[in-house]
Image (spheres, helix red, strand yellow):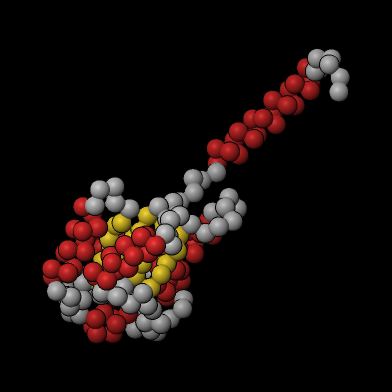
Length: 194
């Protein structure tokens, strides 16, 4: 290797390459934290959320080879979800996860169980556990992808309305994709806030 100083034109080329590298580095997205979403249900909620999560994980595929968000359906009630996370955390089985989301329906669980699950998760010091629930059932959330709906008629009525938009089934593998293709996630968020 020569100890001669670099030519001015070579220095310019190197600077240009460095600028390109910097600009590409600035466009990289920050990876999402390792997150485990634990659902009360074993079919409907996990199927919908897996579709959503797959889109997020796919977005970061070029940056990271490992998926950062996972969905797990366990078929337990509100308090059972929290106890399950506690057991898994105590066993060291889920050490890499930075966040946990407990997803459950309001259903007909005793109000104390419902409220205590949320408050127990939120009041823990430095808690990594968050909660998300749907009032009565997740089918109301699904319906909001297609229309405004303010009546509390129950699961059967929601399913009947959903069938007007597509052939609804709790175990439909492409649940998320159908709702995004035929409905609107942004409209669902807006309607849910209202």
